[in-house]
Length: 331
Image 1 (cartoon, rainbow, N blue to C red):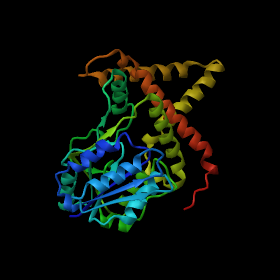
Image 2 (cartoon, rainbow, N blue to C red):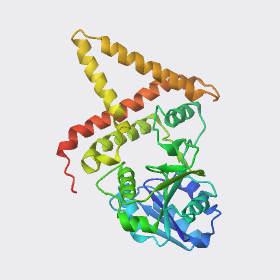
Image 3 (cartoon, rainbow, N blue to C red):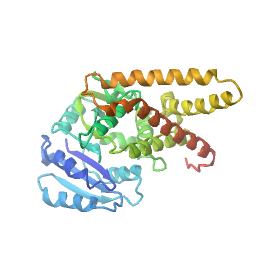
Image 4 (cartoon, one colour):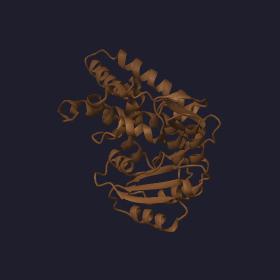
């Protein structure tokens, strides 16, 4: 199979060199690999790094460097889908690293008869410090992030979505392009349409790739806020591509507001129950997160990190809900 590897990037001059080294190290025959790099109008050296990669690597069957004037991730992936030449396309995040057998193992699954493949996606950090390791633990925890199978499942199965997926050409030929009106949830929506079109998404734990955790608490909270915001707006675009778990942080924020109002009017019992239960679970999940890890003082912040992540996501969803009736979505 000819495999097209796609990367969309915006201001990623710090992460691209490592990712490019990972791509060059792939064991899959390079003369059967096309690399499609899309720059979303970066303000740093992202595009020049892409051009340098193209100039210095002649062993791949083709390398394209393209522009995404819309800047949105969905728009960037549509640029790839309109220009790739392979029998299948592999989606790789610019914040990612892939082992040398990543493409080879995806091809093995696709050649077994599957149309979409993907696998385990652990988080990693770019620098080992006690604080960044604590942020990593918060992101890796089921309580702090997600219950998606691609984060931790160890068995081969069919799932609703994968993170770094490989797709046979027929899939996008049938379901069409990414929805460019969406931000952060374009993958939920496209995977829903893929399943509705009759394709199964095969998760194989033998396939592993890595995503860099955000480098600071500020960046992580900004990410969570954006995720929550777009989950709420997506209710107008494709409610069936979401699950009830996407709205748990919103319910938490509404619970805080509701029980605080009741407490102000002399009925504090529900606030006591909610906060007592929440912090009990947060502390318990913190202990589970540090089990087997080298202990540091920064790990004491885990319950509060969980709280901040949940609040950021929930507030984002609340703002999205308020904006939802006024969002001019074109079907």
